[in-house]
Length: 176
Image (tube, rainbow, N blue to C red):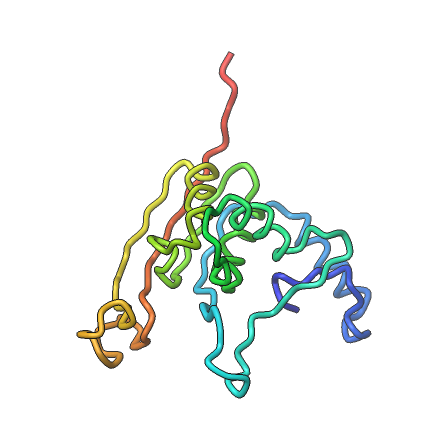
């Protein structure tokens, strides 16, 4: 199952009731650390790339696409917000929601959110939602710097820029 998929939606009978109970237990468990390298592919060059970003269906309108729209996109002043449908943006939104009151999110992602116009709302929410933010911009975006032609100037040998990001949320404890 896809992490962002609403597991309450019928899964074509592929999953046993026991497995669905296990998934539900996992969803209800506390999660304090999320580490990953979510995909980053905001779009595809043509229909043959087979690389479309997926829209996630939900029964109760609280799916990941809805969360991104209600937070990052709503807070953005940009007119073109297609970049916010990138899976890495959804992964950051999901992880931020999933860790609850405290935890750490550590992702290797596309670095476009650092200064991209469409990501102004996302940056605003990250600042509000996390107590400490560490972004290690590894650069390497050949679209911004054509002098870096090819893929040899990127840590992963790809054409998009990369960053390592650590977001920390601390639980507020009321002191009497």
